[in-house]
Image 1 (cartoon, one colour):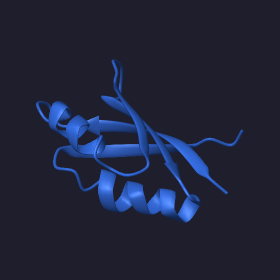
Image 2: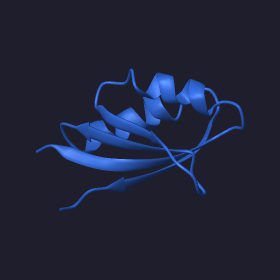
Image 3: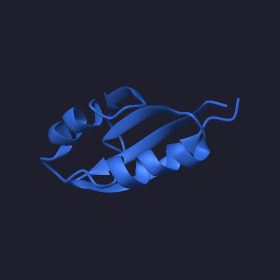
Image 4: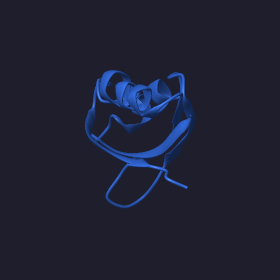
Length: 77
C-alpha cells in the first residue's frame, strides 16, 4: 500500500536553496515548497510503504547538508 507524508524541514540559514535542489532529486518526492513560518520547506513524499518512507527521510532527507530538523506527518486519509 502506498504511504504518503508531508515532511516539515528546518534548514540552516543560507542552506535552504541548496536543500531544495537536492530534495527535488530524491525519488518519491512529489513536491517541495519553500514556506514561511517555523519551517523552511515542506516536502510531499510518497513511498511503497511506511518502512520505505522512513528510510527515505532518514537516509536521504536528513543527510542533506544544512538540514537541521525534520518532522514527518504521515497522511492517514
